[in-house]
Image (cartoon, rainbow, N blue to C red; front, side, top):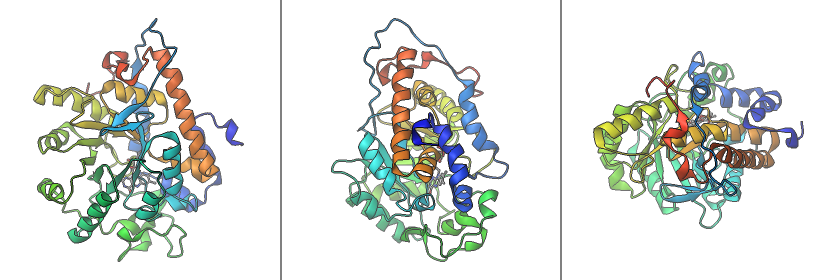
Length: 371
Ligand code: FNR
């Protein structure tokens, strides 16, 4: 169907499934084991209901906000997803350009298909980018990558902590990762790879399963970038991150691709907000320690629920991959425009003229187990 008939982010997935090469579809869409968590990621949002307010002059609504102090046109960011060229020859560069056009922030993945420098060079002057780090067993390599990122102006380092080993994604494993694949990974992770068990296994063997809390001091000593842990899954670890002076955490289960039966980010958010308030007196959203959520976010209403519960912003992954795999750069443009239009309408209907007006009392989250 023509792009004009795509009405929401779910539509891109249905089209992508039809038109993408089997191998690329398998890598992007797959999740761990029985794929229970990936389903729960979106389903969890169905347990939260709105309590809209009326008569509040919503002629003009603004959904611009900040992430780690940087302006964004909407409280979302494009999260890091590996192997961008599996879906389109221009790969992550499409996301860099779309992010510039729509005033949102892109998180560059360690395992991008495009080189890191290509993606930084592809940004416009003043465009803010973050970097997602997989920590290499060889810390000299990690140090080089981190300091290079900082020198190129990266504004936040998101250290992925939910993947000491890559999850078992069987859809992907059934598609053997072949050497002549067009989506060659950038240098970051290419050495000694095992190509026999799907794309995910093939590119991840350098990741250090020995990473531990005690290593965070070292990261602080090698960079001044704000440090954020990506893949925190319970309040105890969020509290530890806060106590260690980090800038924030992403409450995430890696899009359901790691531990199956991990809970959804939005469940973890409710739990963290409650416990960090009780134990450290923190209120959210919080400038000094920011909570992010990702996984299963497909509508502006999903984002507004997370924001109401205290998230600074929300990461979105697969929808943008599906959008460009099916429609090229225009697909991502449309995906962001759809979100923009959904924000405008739903904030009016919610009775919230600005993001600051999206408050906890605007949602009924009593069906979340951790509330
Ligand atoms: C990911 N994700 C991910 N995360 C990360 O820290 N490093 C990575 O290299 C990748 N790679 C990756 C590839 C693909 C194809 C997917 C779908 C996801 C996880 C990603 O950052 C994020 O947590 C989820 O994608 C969010 O869920 P949704 O929006 O895809 O449902």
